[in-house]
Image (cartoon, rainbow over all chains, first blue to last red; front, side, top):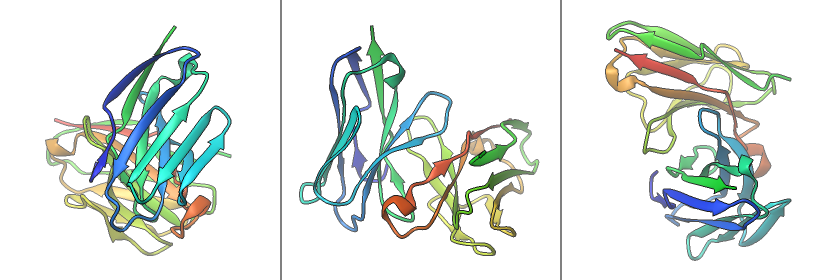
Length: 107
Length: 116
């Protein structure tokens, strides 16, 4: 993705906690989304941050630091169904997608 | 409530053939988008529309045309398909482009296109 960096792949164990990091180009920043995409399916919205800090939504939380151009997605109590790609996305009207982090959750 | 519906789900074309991909949304969204997704690359915006009768170019518009004659429909056309257009195509819609929850994009299930 354009100036969005996130790890290509991560592995974790069921029940564990995993943090997926994302760095992005800060110029023209106007919001940071996280989307989940299961293999062969459409992306679905997970979270949105526009101000610094942590947004919590059930097992998923997302953090943003605008000055550092940094965000992370935190997944708690991992389940097998969380195996998917997680897309870091910047922008408002025209979104810029990262290439995604493929998370593999093992028993 | 169907959300965003794309047709067809799969298609195989020969080089030079033309086709139209249809996207329909029933959420009364103003904004609609067409993306392509290729291995190792993020979703890339082809064209988008901010309302009925309007269209605009995205990041990779060459070889594609679009039309938004009705608010609920956004059509993507390939006039002369090329092997480089083999990809998965996603349509999306959002309430607006004003930011926050109004800009959450909802995606269709995708169209898998192969050009031989």
